[in-house]
Image (cartoon, rainbow, N blue to C red):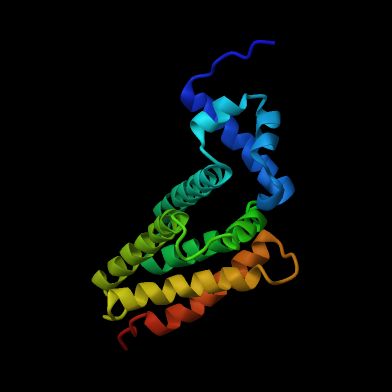
Length: 202
């Protein structure tokens, strides 16, 4: 049977969709490009034309996920009235992301990386997007007199490491609900806020 040639963006969307389902079902290690060919019913030549290997495909999925997180954060920030509330909303979002079905595949993938891997640059870009959002939020809080006049990089590192550490710890726990993961992250940030909030005038 002759397979019709799809427009490039439509083909990529189909490939990413099927690859995501396979990574969730089988994990990173056991998913192969042959599996993705079979699932999409595309030829190997077509698949490799869009993604030169499994790693590039998986990194694209991670970037896509990061963009979706960013959009959720922006929508959440629009509904929050203060930097403190926005920080709590971000913590809630980080916590709920612990339920992402892609995380087990990401943990498998991370074990394959070496310090010389070119993919680390892509992963750093994804992480830095969250870091920049946190930095901007904290700077707004400082400018508004809500947060202490501390070095912005120190504050950003502290908040990012609190959220990242909470995520890492949550992933070692027995399976929790999204609400429970979110509550752990939110409580961690609420405790941190007690340390960086400006004292209210008497």
